Length: 284
Image (tube, rainbow, N blue to C red; front, side, top):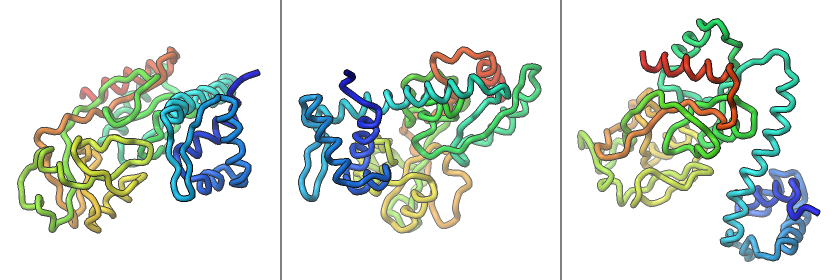
């Protein structure tokens, strides 16, 4: 008998991501006692403790961290098998592109026009994903290609082509101590608080403190205006610039890359043709 069942894995990943049984149970639409029992049963079957629990605190053990990493990929694989099977029977054969709102650096219209001009072009459906889940759309089959930002997005299991390389800027409240400078460095940001993007542990500045968790750019800009954080963003994601915030280049921050990504095993002509059109359009 299999040691891991898909439903149990879904339950564990939900708890591991929330680190809160109540919120995880609500998201799964099950009772909290049933969720706790399922996690204990899973730990018993695997013979390891996955979570450290107290009345006020839930934390992952080393074994839990491992299962979370591999469990996410396993659930993506199961979802991809179902989605790609359904799409294999869909005779319309449309290409699905997932992006984040405003996350195309103004390249998308040119890319779509270049692809539409190809003799093998298909209809392109545009899907909108969040700040950190677009790669999962490709891995689980909901989308064929995605516009992602390297090194921020998880590229595991994906191939990609770089469309744009750009610098990064820090976004500050107008009364910030760095707002009067024409440019800043990563060292200047060492004592600052940067937001934590949901599902991403890297802030972009190695020594910076971890601030409020956010899920999209609108939340980030609101927190900056309140003085709760500053943000280090690819230049194109900071557009359009808001007059009530200050934007300064970070001269020594590693460049950001806007990339077009697709599943490593995907060798369909439809996808290859779109990638070629995108690279050509971005080059122009």
